Image (cartoon, rainbow over all chains, first blue to last red; front, top):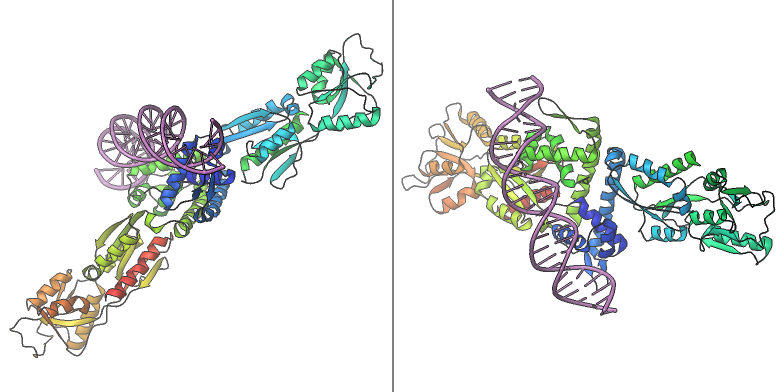
Length: 295
Length: 295
DNA sequence: AGAGGTTACGGGCAGCGTAAGGATC
DNA sequence: GATCCTTACGCTGCCCGTAACCTCT
């Protein structure tokens, strides 16, 4: 009785992609019975079973496998319409955005603001986490776009390179600190990014190479805390100039030059190439533009 | 807010094809406000005007013209799904069928029965009319499939040739009629198909050539009436053997051989090639199969 | 017992038809 | 005034979420 609906096909593809009705429901922001119902009604209009219901999850039947190809083509076509005839202001959907804290502290607000202006109907969900978790989230399709210490070396992922964050060494700006006193890295704790992050690993390796294993590292999962610790004179830190400059101007911390610096932090905006989404591409490039404008 | 829907695109294409919301409503079996509403909602989801509303009808805007191409592709894709993954028993829709009376009197019932068995969910609407009107109906898209004295020489039309109806001469079977008496075509009225039909024209031309302008023709728009008139002894007629045989067997009419016969009646099952419809193709070929089986 | 899927049921909303209201020729 | 499209409005039916149930590991 009913006709084929694009919504059914999109739902079908989501289920195929994640291999489970339950997880598809999450991705689609629906309850699980709703997804079941959509699939059932699709099966009814086609007069065919699309999935075998096994005990643990679903598996495509022969007919279902056949439909996947057509459904993908429908998707592509809808994508083309969105790109070429649809007013971007009318594009609707969700964008689950994951960002590193460095980004959150610098130009995230401006990026989200611009993105919202371009796609006012798109709901943006923001998660701040370390790059390793963001990478995981992207690959398991829990996130759509991640801005992290990239690139992600996976052929399913497209990476847009963002301008790097130059680092600088900071120590307390308190009056008691002699401005010219040299910092002894074997005695002063070095505050840095959380364990498990690339900057942590690189800095640790660099410090070991230069000063031996006796350096003391205070990793912190909060950038804000890092600056607080530096300000309080607990230790020194190599942190993004883009974030430290303001505090240095206020005299709360001061920059110093021990003669070497960790590498700049190279971020990428990364997203899955399949299924192709023009909005995601645009958003990733918008991130680059905003970053260039801001840094 | 809403997503693109195939139904909207189908409606859009129908409006584009017939150039009017009113006529599209007829074709789609909807009221005219319903079509307006669908188009408006499509325009809203795209954020673009698709039609310029002139006083008399609608005209495509630039954006609308752009969408037509994509909508056609959606249509084709949906068509492919119907052909390849959909159970024919689930195909839904309308089929406006136009047939000549000769067909209606012979194998129409069996054809419709078979068609309904193959596509149980398709609503079939039957019109019986002369071939000229059926041709007109097809070209104005008021009919989807016509079975008539074809073919229709128009490149937009696909014609499937059906087995021809052989004719035979019939006169009354009443006892009073001498079985061997020769028929005088200049004295006996010749009953035949309605004015404006091809058999009428051909027979008239043939009779004039053989017997001069003094022959008397009684055209009738009802085949059943033709046989009644013959049976009552009003005149003679060249009518399809497939229809006359039964009456001859009953002795109500009798076949005779004046030494010549009009050409057999060649029918075709004809339908518009665009938009492509697998169901229509199948139906046309089914008509041929049924006819071959029956005649 | 827990994870994954289906069934049952109530409520909200989209979309249809009827009817009335412009606009253009 | 006729034709064509839009707007207004009530109603129906679809589809979602909640909740309970089923079935495998």
